[in-house]
Image (cartoon, rainbow, N blue to C red; front, top):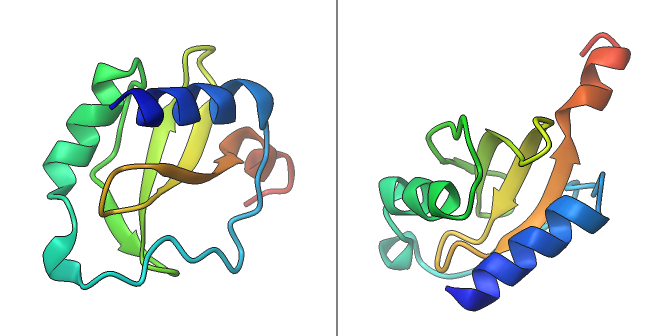
Length: 99
């Protein structure tokens, strides 16, 4: 849990934008993945708000829309086997380009 919290804090504070293209979160069988509700609860326990339900995405990642502590919307890419943050995208940038 501490590693997850530290990784989340570093990513949210230091990395305003990380490209998720080509990311591979895990090669583990889906039977070993955490339940989406548990991953959502982990994020909420670490101060992330407005967390959407985690969905399986490209690269075997859970993809989550959420709001960080500063109120910025983010797209988080998580390893579904342990909830570790693998990449983050700043959703505010999408609006600037009409996406």
